[in-house]
Length: 130
Image (cartoon, rainbow, N blue to C red; front, side):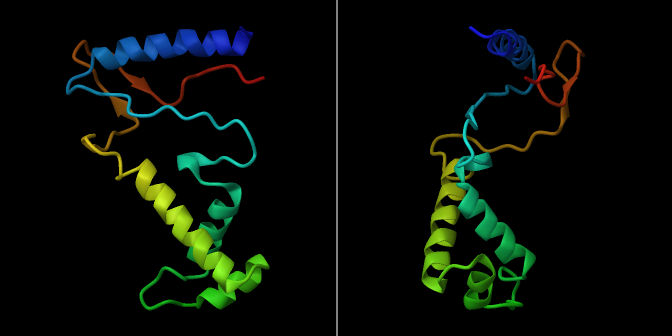
């Protein structure tokens, strides 16, 4: 096991212990590994992420829309049909990875949470970067 993987395992054990001490109860629903350039947060491909970001930046999602699908597609150098399918797949992925998890109560957590013992954990895992 690499030093980084070992450090991650130890840190995750610490986080798990901290989570167990929190009130109200906190449950880890998903742990995702982003291990290649095709993956981004919430399971989007880089192309889906780029399409969503470009469409949003250009005002495609505003009501009323600032631009049409064809205009956004031109900036991405793809057909409007390809962009439409990419956006629908991206939306499906986002829904599935966020609000679409059946049987899981959805809550919003802040960056800092105070467990019943009064300690505070905030920010990332604090791991060394390779």
